[in-house]
Length: 116
Image (cartoon, rainbow, N blue to C red):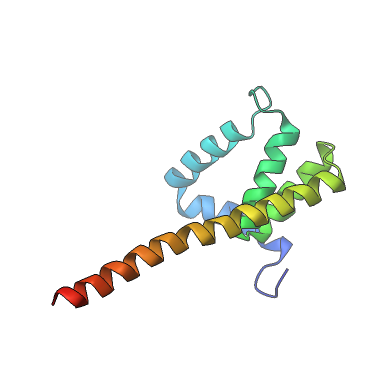
């Protein structure tokens, strides 16, 4: 982690909850529902999904928490590596998909200039 993000920063969770209790309560209820054990998606897959999202959003704290949880859920290093490659491919795909939007916007701009 960088100097700006440290594992012991998680001690600020309680302070954040105290400062925004209504929002924090709603978030925690939602988060706990997503982390439940009795859902259709097994814990192992929930942690792999969580890690893929954490890699994509580049949340160091989520990577810390969900890597530990993934190990407890018996995710293997091979599964972790494949998940990381899939997350990377999907993120790259998203960049390419946004290129379509950029090209359309560029065409609209150049078409507008031609019309004026």
